[in-house]
Image (cartoon, rainbow, N blue to C red; front, side, top):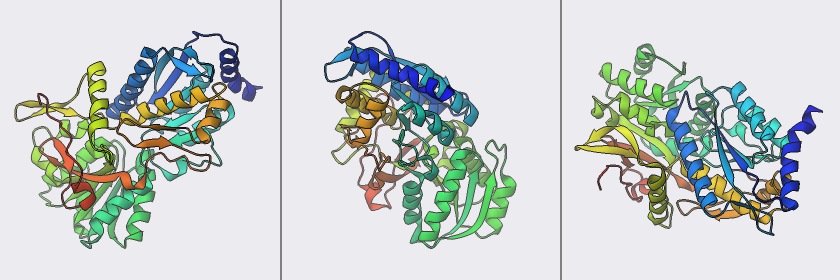
Length: 408
């Protein structure tokens, strides 16, 4: 009986839209780590909010080819990086009759069992673990974020020619565990030697022993795949130890928390490189700049909390593009569907497409639920508190810089 109760709200909404009952609000549910990872959560919430506001300004979500419209309601739930809470949030999304669930990826495998039964289209917009996406097993779950496999392979390719000796540090969060598996595979493919491999607590207060062990092992690169607080701790403890070693990380390297922690020592950021998905697309910076203008006009600029050259450093809304694009894809698919729930999910699996916020095409099919191309990865470094594409990688070096200082 419980299984059917999960499906009823979505079926009811689909039937209501088919009967011409305009005006019923349709929830968009965000499940994000608000209390534990503020930057990740804010990126998801704000990207979703911009999309919801724009759709409502257009008159609401069109459901069905006859053009019936429904206002969208954004519901933001804290999952606190807890799989159990993320599962509860997914159940709430189903009970509310949500059009879609947007999540960072916490508890994704458990969530999928709920969303599959309810035919609730779900987007993971941050975590990149390989085990989170399986189009055949979990047809309701899509990723609109770079996969760990392609980010770690890009990172390994970047350092491989130098023949480095790597110290690998990953934390015991789901992000760190999934990244560790991808890193070990990528480094093995490129025959990069790993001389130290350590797992650290997700909320480590100090890592001096681990840094000492990595140094004694003869490492000349430190690769850390961990939450932002641990990336900052690695940078602090490497500097305190007087060890002149490059540090590389995943996309958490751009989290403002790291710059806040190192506000008194910006020189410590100079050793950091991080891999992420490029901000601008092949068509150039105009689409992203237009998105950013709309974002900052509605929500304000995201101040990092540090200054450079007397000006506030601004975090570009790069990761906000993914939840924004996910909701815009739902909007496109809803207009082609006979209703929400199963019809909407089927339309997305049948190949509904949009042009995303930065000009890249977004879309899926029934066999492929990854939304970011492997060719879209780049590496960045810091100039003071501002990150820019590295110049020692041809693909990254060809990308334009993105403005990050207020007043320009």
